[in-house]
Each structure stands twice: as structure tokens, then as C-alpha cells.
Amino acid sequence: MQEKTLLKLSLLCAIIGIVILFYLSQTIKFPESPLLKEDGNYNVKGSIARITQTEKVTFIELQKEDELTVILFKDYPVDLHTGDYVEIIGKASKDENGEMQLIGKEVRIVK
Image (cartoon, rainbow, N blue to C red):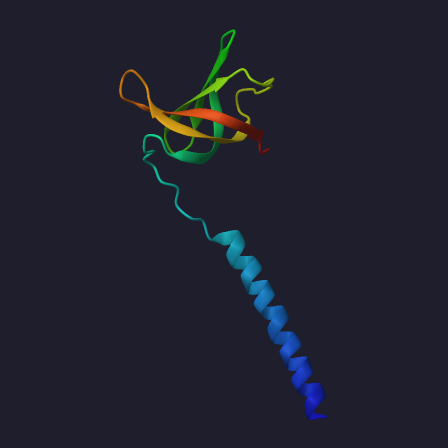
């Protein structure tokens, strides 16, 4: 009888532990670094505030806590619209005014 009780107790503890881990994974948010460092690779998520397309380059103003300019070269077709929530992977660099910008390598619509 004690063996069955011990088995039930261990299963109950395991289930409670899994539920707690799931809850924590949904609620804990790790802070993003607000400052991009030049030549660093970054994964950034945000909403598209404005898109400017030229023949070879697409400029995106990404709205997060602050605005970030993203430059995409037309190596692949881009079907993005204002308001899309996207994840962009790219390399940080400075523009001619000394502002940080992201040169996008991958773009994915999140929702």
C-alpha cells in the first residue's frame, strides 16, 4: 500500500511541477537590449509603422518601445504591410546620421 501512495504522490508532484513551469514560461519576459551595438547580430520583433520600397531596397520603420529602421535588400520577395507584426534577424550598423539601424537578413510575419 505504501508503494502505491508513493507512486501517486510522485505523479502528483510531477504534474504540479510541469504546470508551474508552463505558467512561468508564459509569464516571464526577458528584457530586450534597448541599445543595439554596431556589428552585432540581433533578433528583433515589432509592428511595422511604415514601409518605403524602392527597386532594390525596402526600408521599414519598426515600432517597438522605440522606433528602429530596418533595411531589407530585395534578395527575396517581400509581402509586408503596415501593421504586420514581424520578427527580423539582422546585423546592426550606423546610418549616415549616426543612428542605429538593422540590415535585415531574414523576415518572418509572426501574426
